[in-house]
Image (cartoon, rainbow, N blue to C red; front, top):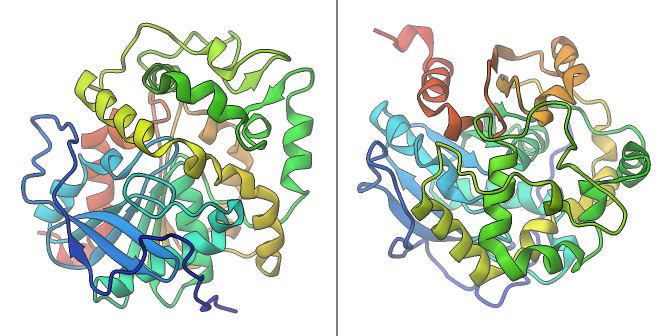
Length: 359
């Protein structure tokens, strides 16, 4: 299998650190049952700039990748549990988020750059191999990372978004055909500045509505207008659930998420969506390729990312031949590792721990 090894040129002015650099933790809310006092915040140099990460524990490396619109903190309830079980758990801020590099060029957020970042993090931490686990966009990035760098990533865990091999029609053409008279949210995100103009005047309010609209305990009843489709002349947030906070999210955590995005803006995060066609072209050599490493999938009954891609799940016998565990969590929404932290932790530990090492 062809492996991408070329370095991505640095494009961020703050990417000149020679060694992994400890930094004080940001003001990030935590809940009493997630003891992160032992976690260490670091900035590490990668070929394309820098990555901020939070690590806890020693042992085999498990790299955790978040989705949109989140941060390393989406794994705060997994880090101490994995560490206590004998793993070196590392949650990153993807490029464009938090303290990680935020290149100005949209193309710098293509999938190849994320793959290079992840391999660079493993090298910067002095490791040779790792397990990679992702949620939402992090799941798609984790899958591509394992596909392109099987020499580094020996196992892959996917939460929410199932693996679908590269290929098929041009993504923006497919997105344009989905909504009919309304615009699919990924199409809505394509034009630089358009979604930012909606979100950034009230980041906290937009995030609260988005989180609530995709959480099982606060989402609207089935059959109503979908928040994933935008009517002509309207905003995406017009269909969000209002005045509700999911049980997994505290006011302090929401303040922290909002504060980070108010500081950084949303452009870096949204630029991941703006590379759909570029990824389609870049990954053409892997069209139809299966992920052969040992793998895990965890979906959710009330998560559109899981239900819309049911055919991808049905194809797992051929696309994920190394699949050793697959779960659909009943009554769970999109934010899987937050809504069902204890259940996800049990699933991860069962998958990560070989039978021979269990008591």
